[in-house]
Length: 491
Ligand code: NAD
Image (cartoon, rainbow, N blue to C red; front, top):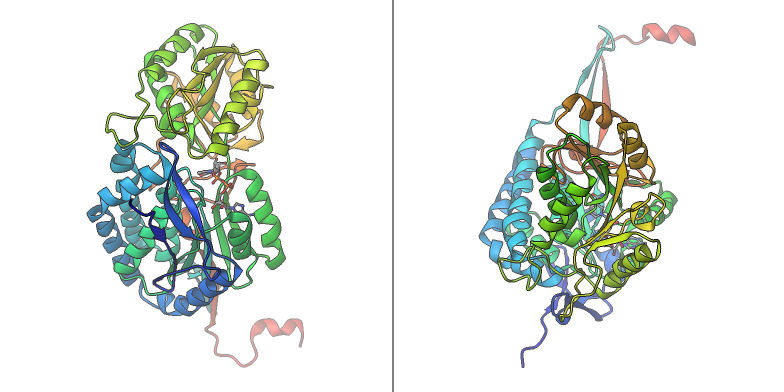
């Protein structure tokens, strides 16, 4: 009988057991079988990782950006050389279909390291106009040791978003990957070392957020926490980080509106809706989850959306035809199912799904509710699964008001042929990203991040480089005078 492989943590360029010697299990959600045992790290491991990163940081920061850039380019190449292994690993630990991990997650990881390798070399400071008697300029400096805490919904991509920017700007990184899906992150750290990142520049501590993650947030040797995850966890991280006045970047939850105007191309909107709502089984921070549809096209849109969704193949994630995989772990399926039960109770009309599929594994069928009102839980909270609600509106002002009536501000989309109307609505919607006639598309070149309780700070784009560096102002006196003119204030 095959034994379950054990994955160690990664500290100072080496695989190491957690100091407790204990491990925890990682389960394939499609089969509910344990596929790995992983080192259960504790505070002593956090100390070891911080020491390794602190030792590595000055040397890594002292290299020219061109050298750090080459490490990222090599890492990008190694990711593509190991694409099949990485994609399979992510499919097995997370349940995301191989079709997606092969064609989306892994190539995007490679592309994002390429992007940061290139764009960091074009970063410059500013020369500031302080007068003829001095010159003044700014430079960006690395922060030192940074902690990157990531969620399970895109286990590899979410760490790459942060790691690319943090590494190329000269920081040493300690990653706390998602507890339920840490395997791809561990492999990426090994590949980073193979690509030339010095020992200690990339460390991975596996284990629960409440202990390992929080010890990282609390540690005075960590300059910043780049966090992606739930809004409630973000609040806790802010509180703990305040003890050391630590900088935090927070990419938090969302409940994202998808607005279909009366003049929209309804067929295109319905296809976009099926993708925007059910990509990654709806386990996407920016997933379309609240649909506001103009009353004149509501019935047509609902019918087309349900038909497009029903055509999505759900099943074995290793089958290249599958587009809908399981949800990630049992407790999460319970949470998603509780939203289905509550929305039924609240009186919405079930248009599709709503029942647990009769197959082994952690499945939730794509579920669409009609006739929703904005006070329903599915319209206010983040379900983070394949469950969405549809509501009618009659005026653009009403659609914007419904969209903004939430604690979240991550993203939204407007579907219309009237670009003027779309631009007015985009300016009124409170969200970090507004798409027009699209939903979910994200580029390396465009900033990603929310407002309100969806957090602050940006991943991706040149703005991510600013997240992992600080501005230093340098002033040089050019007078050469012993007594400077402005000393007259005191003398
Ligand atoms: P989560 O907050 O439960 O966990 C995220 C990470 O934080 C994990 O590594 C976890 O172990 C760790 N953690 C948990 N408690 C901690 C603590 N007290 N101190 C330090 N670390 C702690 O989130 P999740 O369930 O893994 O991910 C889903 C959430 O992520 C959703 O809310 C989703 O919207 C959000 N998300 C946001 C974005 C974005 O860009 N805004 C992207 C992806 C996911």
